[in-house]
Length: 244
Image (cartoon, rainbow, N blue to C red; front, side, top):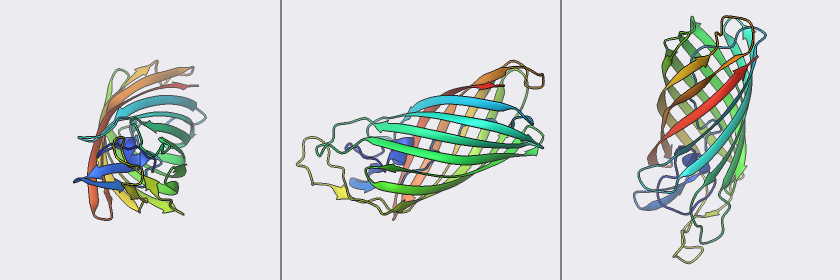
């Protein structure tokens, strides 16, 4: 739901931003509140808390890059249960003929439940945000499979989301070079499915008392569909966290 003015595929988050040019037609998507679902399956231990900061850039085959930054806090409640609060700020790169705001902001409350040791977990969340296309509400679910160990943790996930516009606004997505008002659309209910693959490098032993953390890197893929228009978005992400 944000706006940029370049072609198709704003990006994983750009889609989350909201606009994309699909099959030579401008389409404004309602964005996900959790556009970068990249995390290992292990939940925090009871009483542990963590702070995570990350960022990334994603795009479709054609279109501007989307730069995004995220910050989140996490808390472990024991029995493989973890809760989190996350905030995201994203900016779509490109020149808008109408001076449309390129920013999206989003917030999300989420949870993780281990299903099989530290190797398999389910995730779910509910969030929302705002952009040039108006406010939106977005739930999400996911399943994460990995091989937990002290050295390098490979993992893979499947995820899905829905995003519903709240009082959507018309967005001028005309790109520089064309007269403002040439391409105007409003966000519509958007559904998404995808997957991610990555690795987490633990820093310290999570089974021992004391401060530890880790670095996570990987790729996230989204397939978005809105009112019969669909697009794929792919991009890298990197984050670091401290557990105390």
